[in-house]
Amino acid sequence: MKLPILILHGWGSSSKSFEEISRFLREKGHQVFTPDLPGFGNERTPDKPWPIDDYVNFVFNFVQAQDVNKFILLGHSFGGRIGIKFAARYPEKLSGLILYAAAGIKPRRTVWHDFLFVLAKIGGFVFSLPLLSNISGVARKALYFLSGSHDYYHTKGVMRETMQNVISEDLRDILPSIAVPTLILWGSKDTITPVRDAAVMKSAIHNAEYVVLEGKGHSAHKEDAQQFAEAVLSFIGKLGI
Image (cartoon, rainbow, N blue to C red; front, side):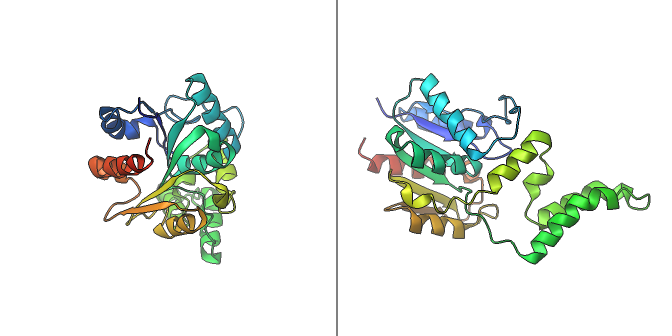
C-alpha cells in the first residue's frame, strides 16, 4: 500500500480546491486526505486568534485521529507555512514534504507599502465622508491590493487577527532544520508568493528538489492539474517507497 498524502490548502481556500489533484493521486493508489483548516471550508472558526503552532497541532491531531503514522505532506501557500513547522517539529511522521508556492518568507516591507497599508486601514473613516461614500469599498480594496494585503481586506474578526499572527512569523530560520526529503514546487508566474521565496527555501533546506512549472501562477494545481500531479508523483517516485 502506498503512503498516504495529506494536502493542506491555502488561505481563503478549502479542500475543494484540490479535488481534481486528489482524484489523480488516488488513481495512482495513494490514500489522500484533504482536511479543511479551521476557519475555512466546513471547519469552524477558532474561538480565539490562532498562531501557526495551533494549526500544526490541528494537523497532528487530525492524522492521529485517522491513525496515520507516516505520510507525505503537501502544503500550498498558507498550508506550506504549516508544513514547514510541522516538518521541523515532527520529522518522524513524514516520508516527504512538498512545499508548493509556500508562504513563510516575510517580505521586507518598504515605506511605500507601509504607507498604503495604514491608509487602507483608516480608509473606512476617510471614505465614509458623503462625497466619497459611494467609492469606499472599491477604494479600500485597491489600497489593500497595492499594499500587498489583499487577503487582509477579505478577512474579518478572529480570522483577521489569526492572519496577523500568521504573517508576523518569518520561517526562514526554521528551514535548515527540515531533514525530510523535500520538493519545492512553484509556478514561474506566481505573484502571491514570488519565485524568489522558492530560491530562499531551496538554499536553506538540505538537498531539496526544486521544480518550476513554467507559465503557471499561484494556483498551478488548478491551471494544469495533470502537469501538477505528474510533478508530485515524480518526486514521490524518487523517494523509493
